[in-house]
Length: 317
Image (cartoon, rainbow, N blue to C red; front, side, top):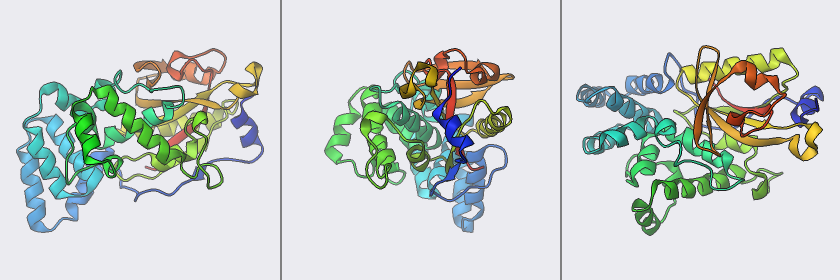
């Protein structure tokens, strides 16, 4: 078996790198719910009662999840009130997409070209943590108070045009925005070359979910203890509702061009013996045993038909 570049780098003494990001949230159980509870505890009495009233009027667990995630993403009661006002008019399928965009919009969110797997994964991750972004992707509706940061600089006429476009068009536009953000300053202060996709440090900087920091970690799948430890972190994150981006790639047996991180997928859950992964090239979701992920000898469809796990973008829980 050949070697991965990340294996060589780790053995040369390189490892994980922490990157700047939003404040770290306290985690007890589900991350979004815990962050919302923290935000609620800091509200003035009258505001807290208003928030409690919104939750009490919620018509089911999906509504509660959407309102809690809105508060976790924005720390704004006005944003929660805005989401609640829109929620009443949403159809069942749209509500499901707002609460679970990875599953409900899996096919529509596919990468638009061979370089945007990272952007597609970041779009899904950010939408999973921000109902306002998921709502825009599903329907084209732009909220005011709860407007996602990805739409902050979008011209009104462009948003109006996208409001009537297919879901896939909004995903394509979002991927372009996220690619620019993740690649800005990615190469010694200069933009990361677009043809090389998304660098792990740019992905970590651009990923967002309920105020968490994200860090990137090189992987060495010849080091069983190291890889097992990272996969334990991945499992802990998805158990708390936070999807995790993982890079895959080949090794030197197929040439140096394949021995670098080549593809990005999103871990969105786990099973008794493995992980549930969304693959942005096909838009498919698959349950993959951990034994298959760490084997490193055969191509894995859920990893974009690559052999190895090469890098992880991990939330700081």
